[in-house]
Length: 543
Image 1 (cartoon, rainbow, N blue to C red):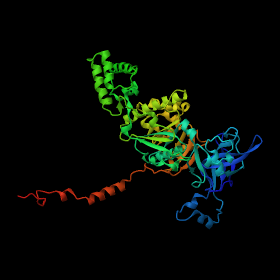
Image 2: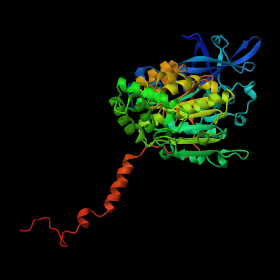
Image 3: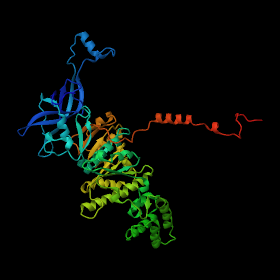
Image 4: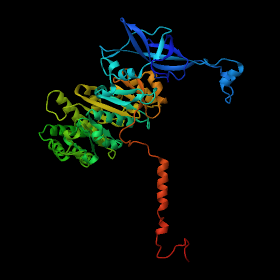
């Protein structure tokens, strides 16, 4: 790796795109795809260091292929034997895309609209400059920024093409917490691990977090509690809500929610249910159940109405016998969320439908509370909120129905105005509702090989250009592309190590088989412990 400031190449010509140029370098290790380089041009009388990102790399010149015909003989040996000079034989042709220069007055990157002239020298961008200007921090003087002292940023890792820790990469929390976040990766690539890194960082900023955990992957976040993650007397709080604490008050449901849990009610049933539901919703009481609802329908249609009778049977089976739904109990919002608190909803023992119903009702209540707070009305949630959804395709599917889908779309499209952000996590982007995914302004994309999932990312993620998509299949676990509103340009990163224990590691099948086998070998078998009438069994029937 060349040191910062060292000349690594020379410009050859403009590229195919309006912001692309081609350059050559003789050093195969100096510049890799995703690396950042700089060139200097005058802009309105001021010399500016313009940053560009390498997007493609190929060999332009090398030793002839015939020198490599024998794999047992190095091509350099063949060249020396023939008297062919090979010290400077290799030459690499690379394409770079202009990112821009940092405009302190605007607090953002500006595109100079000028490519470097042919022959211009290119240098590796300094670590300190990249740390300050790659994230969309909006600071006036990036050259004097001290990243370790910046407030409201999340240290997620370091540049992949630099030595580990040489160039730290940070995300501005305000950007992804308000414009929503997507973490997309194949199974085993580290998406939940990366989400936990972000949670650690956000809790240091006294965030109010709500994690929807359908598989129990966040049980070790309790390690965040204590002074190690806090400053100035602040200690983060982590609370787990197991299924026994998750309750939905029946009056908080909407008619569409009830339709979703019933078994395909007929048109006559829907008509009677709608009438009874309106009657109960118009009453002053908010603590009513199936009995009161049935009474309301019978009062209008008679107690011998066959449709009401069929509805009663379905309501009692699907709602009254489901412990999730209660006439009077729910989850108090002031117990659920608070600044400096991360609440994990452990839903791994619940059915998918119950998980969706919990998400539906809680999101509606939280969204309404944030709306009240921003409009000056009394609210239990008078602070910004961020909700993180593991396996988001369960709650916002691209195909099929889910009662949680409408409110997911509402929060991702309108939540920014009311301080309600959402983070979505999935290993199958193609299975996520595309309206929901497209509203996620910041993306952390890890290894994705499935062509259908890559296509979904291309269609829904604005920052996912062809060069970003080309990187995804070659990433290894723990490597990611950061892009979108929180970054001034897509960046290849190596995710940092967690400070809490990882609970999402894959189970070793071989280790599990070995342990189980050894355990069974140590236990006496049934034939060894059985008493066959006090005598010893010979295995042969006595005549």
